Image (cartoon, rainbow over the protein chains, first blue to last red):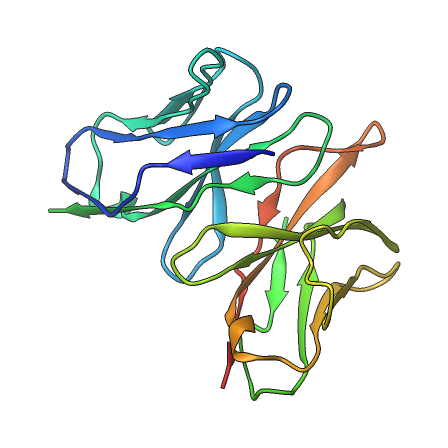
Length: 112
Length: 117
């Protein structure tokens, strides 16, 4: 079946540090890949997505590249801010099907 | 354009009562999905609906849970005879349809946090 594995958190960084949150997946075919962010007490917001191999999704300084050879979609940001503190979910949607499979989430804490 | 709306945001029920959660999709979206998030866990798919049709309910518990998306009005997730293990955040998402298919990006509502005493 389909699955998403994320690095466990919490991840604690100082402001302006470099961020990497690892995500690997298992899926048949060619899934679309997503990163969602969840701020405390809120729902999930789509952060970025990539729909095919070698695509790079980017938004608000975050980037992730769809690597089919390593089945990975790692999230990166060059300089984090306190306002980036949230839980980040990696997710996949198999081609031609609607059910999205989520990772367990990685909590990021950015301290001033 | 208003986002996905869910109500209530918080719901407290005693064991054995019924919980009714509502979701209004984004304007123009005809596909609705329900997910459950247990404490400290990721989201788990429950059910996928189009207007008046259940497309995939593979994630729904076999008993006590039901979902509908009528022609008019919001989608409803109904939990009968709630138990403490039903305490969770329930998220609704919606997507639009183009060329006869649901588009891949799902937009999420703020969730309903159900607490069963």
